Length: 281
Image 1 (cartoon, rainbow, N blue to C red):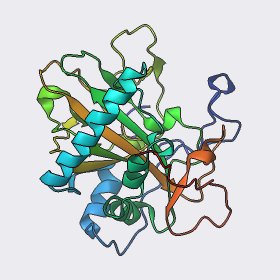
Image 2 (cartoon, rainbow, N blue to C red):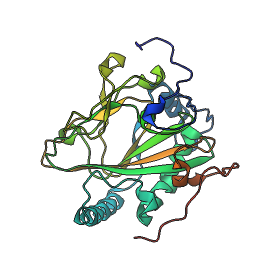
Image 3 (cartoon, rainbow, N blue to C red):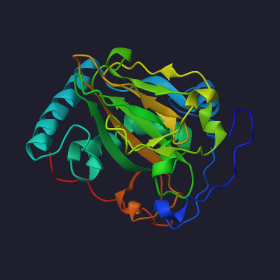
Image 4 (cartoon, rainbow, N blue to C red):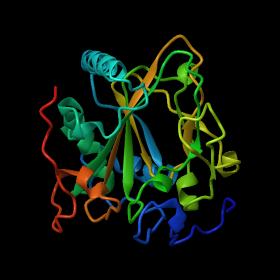
């Protein structure tokens, strides 16, 4: 699809990809929040137009230092058990302090201003590029990976370390979320790829923007926004925690509803499992 063409209203993911047996509506659903509490109305409008917001203030430098110290200890534990800096995924179901971040009122307040009152947090994954690790996140859309019925997920990217162009910060293509679901290729043949999908020639949809964040700040982006990051070739680490939120009316396949924590409002259908805080940490 080229820029300026109408996005598709529906697209069913081919069965061989085994994402879900449910039909998926992969188009952008703009925020309908008219009276945001922490964002301005202009900011909500920018999110609808550009597909992201950044930077947003959440934690003070002292609080950010505490988050970094916690992650340092957690990474030591995980690597000692045979994991690596990218393997701390669905962390809110394992670690109480990550559950606390997923449900943190300052973060949830921003998300509610985009998604509305009824919000489920279902994902938490540390993306930690160690100094000089050389791995790249190719241009991709999050929604391609997820067995969710509707594209109504907002990703919060919480900077654990300062994140800039020197250590491989997040990059986005503003407005690309309005193109609908885009064709991608698999990247199993790329040893430096963090993820296994790439939307080729992504920059035809716009000029990339680097999201420079201080530790403790967040960005927010739509699940259809093209984004990625360059390798970290510096001597500094670059870690961010992705927190995923959707509206409670979204349906999940492959038992992903078991991951969902109700962080605001109600889930009248009871589709999301709403697991309790783990006792770890």
